[in-house]
Structure formats: C-alpha cells, structure tokens
Length: 186
Image (cartoon, rainbow, N blue to C red; front, top):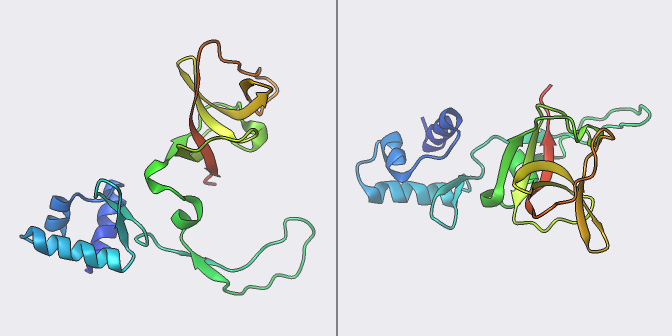
C-alpha cells in the first residue's frame, strides 16, 4: 500500500488528516526525519499541503471526477460525450480551505432558494457579504441562515419563504460566513 493510499484510508476513516505522530505510525517510520521527508514528498507531489500552523491539508488526496461536457436543461438536444477535463470537487468548491466548513440545514426558511432541510451548505468565514448573498448570521445571540439585505444604512436578513418575516436585529448582527454551495444527496 502506497503512502498516499494509507493517507486516504486514514482520512476516509477518521474524516481528518493524521497528526505527524499518527502519520509516523501509519507509514511505519520511527524517526521524525523520515516522517518529515515523506510529508515533503507528499507536498511536492501535490497530495497534501500545510496550513499556517503546519497541519496537513488534503489537496489531491481525494479522487477527481471526469468532466464530460455540458447538458441542456432547457429543450432536449443531441448529447455528445467527450472528456473535457478532470476536476476535484474540493478544488472547484473551496477557495480557502482553512476558513471553509459545512453545516447541515434544519428548517424550511430557505426553501424558495432551493435549500431544503437535510441539505448540506458549504460556507466560508471571513468573506464580506454582498447584498443578496446567503449568509450564516448571529442575530441577537441566535444563529440563522438567510439572505443578506441592505436598505440605506439598515442591514437585515430575509428568508426565502413567505411564511417568515424579515429579521432586523434588536442589538447585534454578526455575519459568521457566506454560503458558497448547497449539496444535496438523492
């Protein structure tokens, strides 16, 4: 089994990257130098990278998916299958891995935006929201996901469901993250 496949197995089982000591055990190395050498080879080959704290981040560890072309969502047209490229979903969806995380959706306040209960949303911290973007916000001590709206100097949150009223903060509104993608498994 290659170091890359061992790393992938660990990641799949634990849903995180191993620490350096776990990696030493995983690869069967006794010295820190051998582990650091193996990590550098994985970095050089593009399998992993390091964050600002030196922790490992998966890069090309996950498999890529073939991109075969486009599909008509309007009127039917002849289909042509042609390998256009390959892509990693992480690479496609995530710009800042350290600031990105997922949340499971509960409730139906964003149903008209196509976000249903049970969906997963991929969000990024540290982005300044633009009006009309969907955000994760803390409003007067409680968290919610809504559209970010502005009217003059007033900022408020708007649901994508007519059953819900707009939310104007009484004391405090903090934008925690901006929604980047919605993931639904059928």
